[in-house]
Length: 511
Image 1 (cartoon, rainbow, N blue to C red):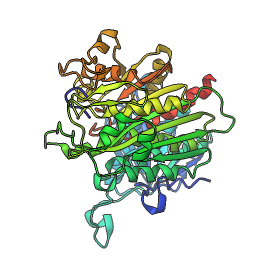
Image 2 (cartoon, rainbow, N blue to C red):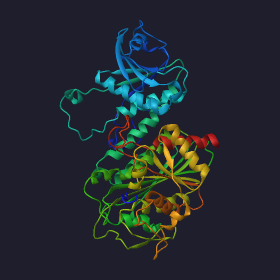
Image 3 (cartoon, one colour):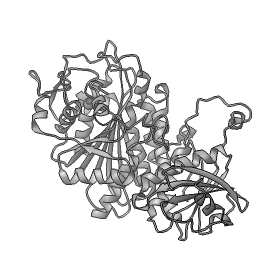
Image 4 (cartoon, rainbow, N blue to C red):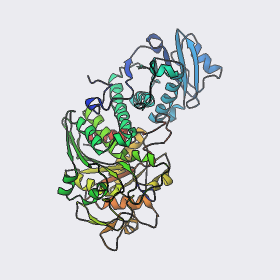
């Protein structure tokens, strides 16, 4: 990252190769057409909507709580009561007209937090009346994403979490008038893929080197329709990837060019190309970063992790799409072998690049990976990367930056983000920004030292490697970790997995 400008077993992920990547939250999800009071759940959650009564009251207790002002429709307001031998959590959902999946995911996060405090084990959520399937899916996603914990390296006493007063909900029961088993199952597949992506992100860099990410990718080859190929340093040389190779040369760790292909049943439509940056640790190279917060640079592989998570979800859902995915995994380290400011390297598409700043390394990796995706048959491209600190300055932790060269394709990507709550904001790609990346001694340079429009100029750099394929670029430096989302309060967020799944679904709808 360049800070200056840059039946399926629901409880096991494909990343669980040789027991290495185990899911962080083995929470059962069940569905029922019984009313919450008729289930065996010890705790039930009811959403409170503006000016609406609770339809299935119990001894008048629930509507009584609303009438007393203790339970409110105010968004994420919580109230608790007991009735019919159960504990009831009432959570505010606001106005029905404003109800959408993202609000429900956040409300589910609040409800689960309170249920944990109260020691709940089996939690039943009643789906609000007269809503679409996406609301039920959001309840599942919000609960499972909130239930995630990364505690692999936490010490545990003989009584485990109980010793520290921590308890976990064991099961989520979705109650609705209609059978929502298929909806819940699909939502659990997606949420599980997001959580295993977060496991990859949160792993310490000594246990998430490029070879480890390659192992996680190889495990995906066990899924129907998925093939995986991994190339190392020799492969980069053979493919003429002097740009990617320049970043990798500073580290003793072998880089990994990971290529995955997926063809779903009866697949039609254009081949979707997903490209992810996976710098498993980014020191900045010789243009070294400040020490403060450098430990966060283990998250610089988040784009690549997201691509792997999306492939897992898409394959498990058996979506009828064709996909080629490319992940460029390497460390960016300073050493006697590292690239230097002033070096000139040649990318796989033949363009020469002057290295101005070795901390603008992600675009060097992506340049060759984008070319590779096009050569492997991608007909629509999206790349995802923690690329620039400038995007954090511009958009904070609310939107990912979105760029592209084809209006219809960019709009399709943006719509997928809106649908899943992973929202984007499009920035301009005016030709004058491209001129900032011109070099006096090479075809282009990897950074503009004026430090203006840093995210846009980085996107303009990438654009030189996409050929004639419609392309979109997601800069997720503000969204990959530390967003304080209620359902992803700490560490990696898995941002982009749900967006990519929805994007793949949209291709099946449009084909």
